[in-house]
Length: 381
Ligand code: GLA
Image 1 (spheres, rainbow, N blue to C red):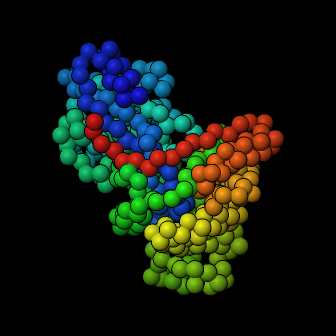
Image 2: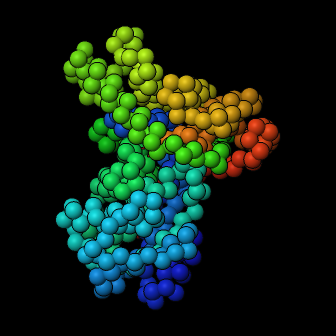
Image 3: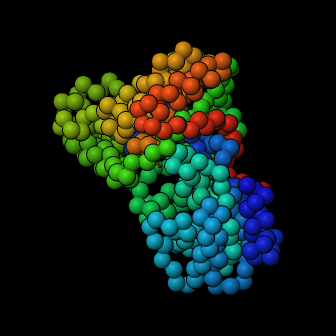
C-alpha cells in the first residue's frame, strides 16, 4: 500500500512526495471510559493510513483518495468541511492547524490505506493523525504527538459530529510495537505495558455490520454520563467525572441516580477498575484473569451500557463456548464492528469454525477474522 500510494502520487502530480503513516488501533479493555477522563488500554495495529504529500506552490490543495478513487480540490482561502466526505478530514485538520496559528501553504496529497472498513479499528482517527503527521513533516511544524491527537479528536467533534474521546487518535499517534498503552484520559499520559501472550493470540472477529444509530447513541451515552455527574455532585462535590468514583461507592450511587442512569454510571465506574486489574493481570502473566475481565467488560457494555447488538453478543457468547478461548468482548464504540478475542493458538481453527457456523446460521453471513500484530504509532517514512 505504501508503494501504491507513492506511485499514485508520482503519476498524479509528477513530484516526489513525503510519506506519513498512522495506524488503526485495538483496545484491550476500557470501553466508553475515555470521555469520562477514565482509563483505557489500546494498542496500535499494523494496518493504517498512508498519506503522500508535497508542496504545490498554489493556493489550492489537490487531493486524491485511493479508496474512493476520487479527486477533490479546495481553495485554501475559502473552504468549508462538510460532514460525511473523506476530504473533510483533510480540511478539518487544516482548519484546526490554521486556528492554532500554523500557516498552511498549498499542497498535493494522495491518501491510501488498508484498515478493514467498518471494523471499528478507528480508520478516521488514523486518517486525521496521518494528515497531521504529513503536514507537520512537510512544513516542519514540529507538532507534538499529543497535540496531533488532540487536533484529530477536535476535528472529529467539529466536522464529523461524533463527540469521541481521546483514545483512538492517541493510540494511533503513540503506539509502540508489542506494547499496549495504559492511558489515563485525564492527564493524557500513558504507561507502556508489554503484551506477552505465550501460546495465545489476539484475534478480532468482524460482524461486518454498523447499525445506523451508532453515532447518535454514542453522543447520547456521553450526555447520560454528564447528567449523572451533575446529579452526583450534590453528594460528591469533589468529583469532576465518573472516573473519580470507585466500585466501593456503587451502593450509594445507586441510591442517588435515577434508574435509567445508574446502569450506565455503573459501567464506567466498574470498567475503569477493570482496566487497572487487566493491566496488573497482563504484567504478571495471568492471562486467565485477563480473559475473565474481558468477559465482564462485555457483560457490562451489553447489559448496563447498552451499546452492543445481536451480532456482537452472538460472537462473544459463542466464543466463550470454545475451549482455549480465555476471553472475548465487543470492542470500540459498539453497535457493530468487531469483538476482540484471546485465543489459544492450538484452538484458533476450532474457534473460527465454531464462530463461522454460528454466525452463518444466525445472520446468513460469514464473519471476518482479523489477526492482530501490535505495531508502532504514526511516523514519517
Ligand atoms: C470510539 C471513540 C473512542 C471511545 C470508544 C469506546 O472508538 O472514538 O473515543 O470512546 O468508541 O471506548
